[in-house]
Length: 320
Ligand code: UT7
Image 1 (spheres, rainbow, N blue to C red):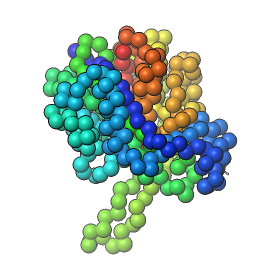
Image 2 (spheres, protein in one colour):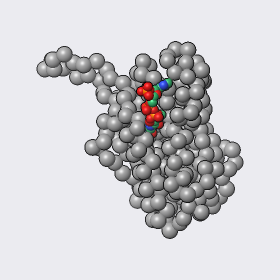
Image 3 (tube, rainbow, N blue to C red):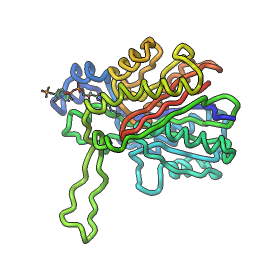
Image 4 (cartoon, rainbow, N blue to C red):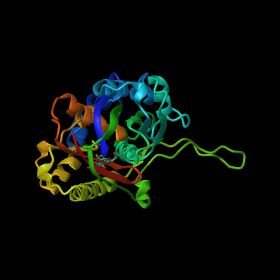
């Protein structure tokens, strides 16, 4: 037995923030952002929270799957921007949707968060411990951006994507995941300052800082490598894959991965143009777009892959 995705959903904040708008509040331009990244606009929260977007994406995924809240045994949210340190976003979602029979917890693997959450659910399911799980990737990245740092804040957006997964004979065929903590500070956001009485001059809150070129180089080598690995583990080639659903950080990264895999860019659907980089939410949002656009038929094989903070990476092959 393995784990099948039986329903998907997504929720984006209402407010659209265009590159042109950003160029009115900081020294940037649509030309710079579009040509370097492919991003045209992103959604940013006003009243939405990580949990409220997660719960809405979950409701849509449950409807798509035809599953009730009571049937869910496990909720895992991949996020680095929960609303609270505790309770977890997953516990907030459990309460919001009434999944009274579910265990719930978050995982933080940054932009690989949805992949790691999915694989964790898969292993519980494969072990026979749970049958049905709700897996979410959700972020409110706008709250951890330095809005005076044009080199990072223009790249990211907010949103949530969800999938209902269930024990089945078809589904996840192989997965790989990995981490390189030694390179972690190339994409980092420090936690709150410790102001206990023993600490002198606690430092202020920090925001996200990234060595873009370092992360870029990591992504364009590690992603093709881990995709080759999952293909090999599943005894498949790139020809067997209908779509490569990658974390949406930069169109140049995606095109470079396509080139290194010798696969047409047409097989790489894109949401970064209208969502920006939504970290753990990128993959499930794009997966839902592809699913709801009717692009997936039963039996199709897809690759999903995430990469980023940690540094972390991962990929799965999934039979639809
Ligand atoms: O999800 C996590 C994974 N993250 C990623 O995968 C990100 C990977 N990295 C990247 O996508 C790219 O490195 C960036 C898009 C972040 C940056 O592109 P780049 O081609 O590496 O640009 P750069 O950092 O080398 O900056 C080039 C120039 C600099 O000016 P000078 O020093 O050449 O005069 C920057 O100051 O662009 C300037 N710049 C900007 N100009 C206008 C930086 N940000 C902006 C901006 N608008 N927003």
